[in-house]
Length: 180
Image (cartoon, rainbow, N blue to C red):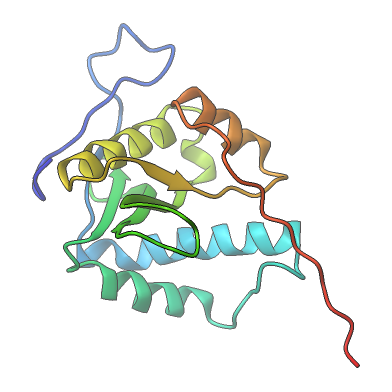
């Protein structure tokens, strides 16, 4: 997929509709405020699941707007948005193509870091289309695999990823340390 390509996928259960009411496309600088708001929602979700494990910084939207803006021009980054065709962003996916990581015993791969769809656009196939567009872009960038992490409590995401062909490979475990 080139930077200007659009990805249209039919929503599950809507086989008769010619195209969904949204498109997946490469993110632009104009998308950063909405992407940052969605990313902040994702951070708050994870923090709510386990505040000892997932930090919640102040001004999380500003931090993500800076981070994603920094990633936008990177040839290794994959930043895609789903919009209604009028510039209204309803979801995004972010990841990067990474080289060999000896600590993780992981060869070259695409790391899928974030995928989030606004509440109003959920259960319409948006997340699936975002992930599949990410897969296509990772393939174009030469990644032989995609690796992602999902919170143990986020069973809906795990079902989505399993349906899309992802398999469990690692389990992260955390232990809080007492202070001396």
